[in-house]
Each structure stands twice: as C-alpha cells, then as structure tokens.
Length: 76
Figure 1 (cartoon, rainbow, N blue to C red):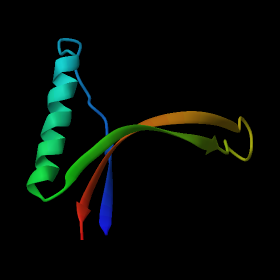
Figure 2 (figure 1 turned 90 degrees about the horizontal axis):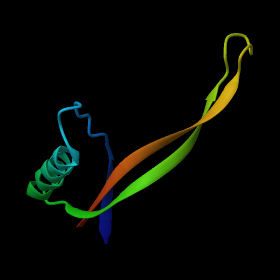
Figure 3 (figure 1 turned 180 degrees about the horizontal axis):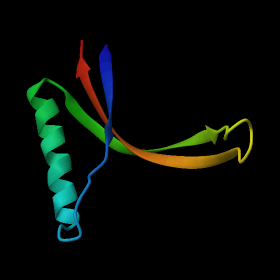
C-alpha cells in the first residue's frame, strides 16, 4: 500500500532571480523529502474557491485561488 504526502509549494523569488532559482528551490524540496524516504510523484496546480463574507455581509465576494502542490509517496 502507498501513503501519500501533499506539500504546498510557493517559490518566492526576487526580481534579480530567474526561473532557474524556482527550479533549484523545487529540487531542494524534492531531495529533502527523498532523504526522508518519500518518492516524488508530481507537481499539481490546485484551484479552490474562497468565500469572503465581508463585514456583516457588506462587500461579500467569491474569488478563485490557485496553489501548487507537490505530491510524494512511499510504500507502507
């Protein structure tokens, strides 16, 4: 049987950094979990709806948020 671990991933970079920096940060995350016995499975874009009730219902709105999730697995 496999056990899965899902980890949110946000690569905060400065304007002087490149997409290579994002890749390096993801690589570090994957390697860190690999040393703990987890196997990298995939990176997924996850979409969710966020309800903001506003203040006493005034200015209530709904928006969409996107997240990157890194999925790992290991045999248990």
